[in-house]
Amino acid sequence: MKSVAAGSEENRYREFQKLAFAHARCGETNALAGMIRQGIPLNLCDPRGNSLLLLACYHGHLETARMLLKAGAEVDLRNSKGQTALGGVAFKGHLKLAELLLWHGADIHADNGGGITPIMFASMFGRVAMVSLLEQHGAALIKIHPLTRRARLLILLAPLIRPFIPKS
Image (cartoon, rainbow, N blue to C red; front, side, top):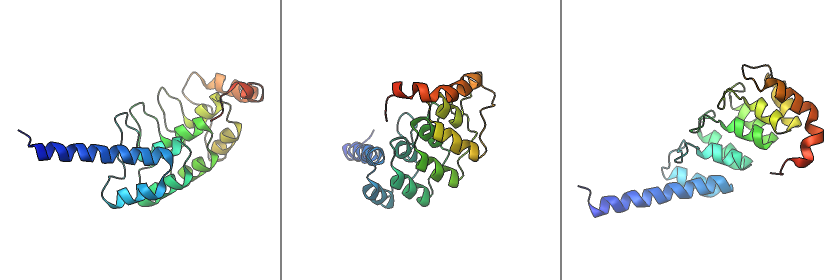
């Protein structure tokens, strides 16, 4: 049987973890770095499997991502849907974050669920500059997924469909 003190300690630790996720999502680099120094695991994941790095990247926080990678965060840690930080930034169009992740060895060909690679995310959402960056690093749209032809078509149509894509 758990003591009241042990249960209370577990609750405090859960709240501490929630705060770390909030700092990652909001780009509060110094606060998150302090929590890591105090013992929060660097590759901590939320209930959906999103790591601190994935959250920082998805929300566009370059300095937070840089701090996490410098501290040793796993660059290709996947969430429960199989998505990586590079897949997230390709989807969102965060070029500087993509460059940072690639510099730290992110898998450019990573299957981010259903055979979709980061370059496919970028092409499906009209992120032309991202597609170009990923191609410069060796990514190709010719992949095992049936969306490949559609992805190439979307690249060609991107200038026409861009006005209809919500801004991030």
